[in-house]
Amino acid sequence: MTDGKRVYIGIRDDDNKGMQGVAAVDASSGEQAWRFKTEASIRHTVAVSSDRVFAVGFNGQAVALDARTGSKVWERHLSLAQGSFYSGVVTDGRRVYLRSRARAFALDFDSGDVLWSVEVPGGWHQSYATPVFDGDRVFVGTAQIDATSGELLHKGESGSISSSITPHGIALGSQMFDYEKLQPQWTAPIHGRRWGSASTAILKDRIYTTGSDSGHKKAGGFYAFDAGSGEIAWFHGFEGCILWRDGYRSYSGGSGSSSPAISGGQIIYVGADDGNLRALNIEDGEALWKYDLGSPVASSPAVSGNAVFVAALDGNVYGFVSMADEAEER
Image: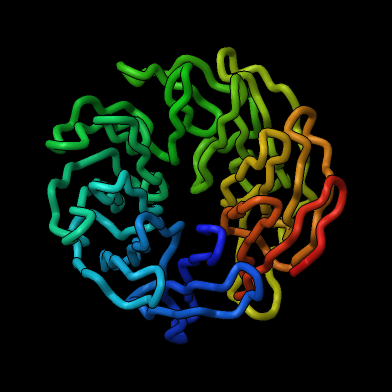
């Protein structure tokens, strides 16, 4: 996540070396501005709004930090009774939304007080579904919740991945669900897996998402498909996945958990398990450039102007200046 001046990163530490937390990096120089140590790893994207940075560790420690200094504004410990916290945090400027494996929460933006919590579709892979909001409604997978009261308005059968709101309905990976009843309208014919931690990206009448086979036997790739019909517009294949590399624990995956980012309506950036950050032409999926970081890219690219930032599983944050057909590493 970036505000143009700094890049804010949630840090995952599976080796238990005490490195977990939230960090802010200067967008121009790459120098660390501040670092806040949390009790447990941050497994997904942080949220930034009004000089506040919000994050939650997988142990349920939710924090609001001062974006300028990294000092703690408030802290809440949420119940682990219904699973750990793996998904990202989002905010509408009034409430902060997050979820555990089987429960969604809304916290007060200023105080961190729990305004409501409600049970949502559970399961270990469901826990990666980052909430999204649309006016007075919050969607957690296919659970639809009143944003003010926390009333569960509807609960669909899926809910396994992060959803995106489109004019055609609620997009979840390779599926589209009716906006009101949350019933499947179509399923696009991508490789077997239709769940994961990556969100979809939406532009006009197309949806963009990663896909791989359920057994991780194929590299998978990146898809664009029509939001109305599910017909595939184009596919960009990845090169495989790095299973192990010095500097981090074994990592097994298919296409990846990096959510795509659209820039200027022309370029879409996406990381992958093959260690590459790619800039793709949004019209036909052709690679404008790619950069091999040497480690799986599990984070989502953050874009500010012609600058793009991404973190890899080697523990580094990279900044690039993107050109039409090449990238200069910063």
